[in-house]
Image (cartoon, rainbow, N blue to C red):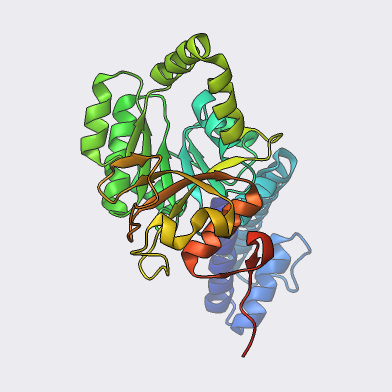
Length: 336
């Protein structure tokens, strides 16, 4: 379409210039004469010289063929949905440009689909894949291209996203993708997929925060169902189910939190929120499971708690410094 439009513009420009130089008419009149000739509406005067006749004949033949070509290209685009796809892509690009705090999932295979299903409908996603057929089936904003290309990651909003998931089929591509993501965003949280065990250490060294081997995790889950089926199923339901009241949640203790430097007993976490703190993780990554009441909470600690959605919301409010109403419900501070 760009080529066809450019050809029409060139013909109109050449015709206008020719009429101005040969027939010595004003530029606007020359453009008018060119349009009437190219559109086969006729010509307002009879050429006086052989040169003028040759010019008009050439302009008619070249102009009409160019306009017919451009018309055919536009018609083909309309019939094949090219314009619809073009405008749809523009809308998609504008939507992605306005997103922030989203997750970029690279690879829309079985693993990518499972990741999207488990992230839930509340998390914004952008999917990157090289297959146009698979991209057309994605119910989320998409970018068609090679995820190892920095420009593709930039188009997906890597500078504004909260996490990058490298889940393409090749470990080598996931390794390169991890390196690219870490280079573009040194602070980005990256989860990478590994097909073979020997790739896990390489991906970690390349900058992945977490490496997941789906085959190994699948085998571990199957073994857990054999050994402890009820415990395993309960954990699955608590983490991903929708038919139980309790949930597992992680809450980060940020600098400036009012309970920073206090013990679990002094902060009265259980009494004030109803949530049960199952574990603490310090900034170095070490876990303290079933922490005793004397455990001191510091900035950078991650509280892993279980409770109802209301209790977990109250815990987040307490950590953030909000007030709690009756029953541990978060309460906004009243105006002075």
